[in-house]
Length: 532
Image (tube, rainbow, N blue to C red; front, side, top):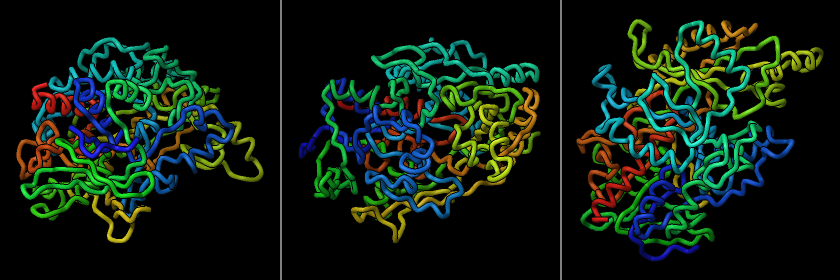
């Protein structure tokens, strides 16, 4: 589809946030065009259905765009980043390549400064997002169980919890004996048919695609509804600039179409939803008269305060099979016993432990969660000892914002259209390292209590940069933030960021439900301005 020359709203990015905003606006009668750098992915062609699925995970379907090198992708200069970028350009964005763990932030996550004297408080609360969380759950479809005493009350999930598996059952019993709180994971995966999509068949490699449509990627949830409501979606549209008039008001989006031809579409409002790297890159690329350091960058914070969720992992080997290769790999149970700050532990803020199932045959042989099975004599015996007999606990930490962790434009690297590529600079601080060490100790305790005869730990999972947050943070003060509490750029209020860049802090939880709730809230603010 060719974009019109003008529309009411233009959205950049068709992933989690862009899809939610497009649906909300189009459903209210607003004329919307979304520009997406990638195209549609056919879920019937997922590697999950092939014998070489594990090889695809390391090559053509690797989550790092630098490894995958899909023509839809752009490269990221990552040599100065301790955690590598994981993201996907396509309709559905990175929800095509995710485990679909779907927790909400806790109320304390919005007031870190007030509680612990670090980072900053958000300019909104859990209660402000609660109705948008609920609306998002209904569209995405969530499996889980109501009644968790460690989190605010919320409505019943759309489908029951997914089976947790034998390894998680052993860990749950261990948590009980240790007196540690745990709960079944919320997952954006259908445990029963919902929303016209099938139920999970427990095949396992959710990050490669879902042949039943049970995993709730936004190409299957939000986009059919948005298109039915009248939204337009232009694929293979490589955006390279937001244009402004002499007064600084954003007027148009410039992009290369699928043929490489330059095009532009004028708009009354522009929404950016291209993840924490892509949105920061586009704001920096859009430097112009009156904003020479980038669009919306009066504070100097565009691209700064990049946050991930630094993760350690402990893997236990059990004597008996625990069927670790059966079922969604990252949605089972989670423990938030150590989520809030306890200064006696030697660090601020906290972490969650999440049960993860084991590798498939190739991952077991070459070593992903465990060291490589040695080649040569004894290889097959060692493989049989561990295959299907492992369960892991991730230690997912809160990453406090620091200005040195950032996204900039690389002076040399470009994409295939000659557009400067983003450069990621990222390092862990002592607080995070202390948190991971403490968390791995607790994870090993739990695995031993569950009966593991052997435990192996990783201090940092380096290929873990799915959560790209904080590079255009929201706030009340234009001198210390990039957007207002509704995602509008302070200096260009007809540009809204509806994605992870607006996060003030990262919490210690997967961010997608919060990101989408923020996008719905931002869209509602636009509708109020229009009187819709």
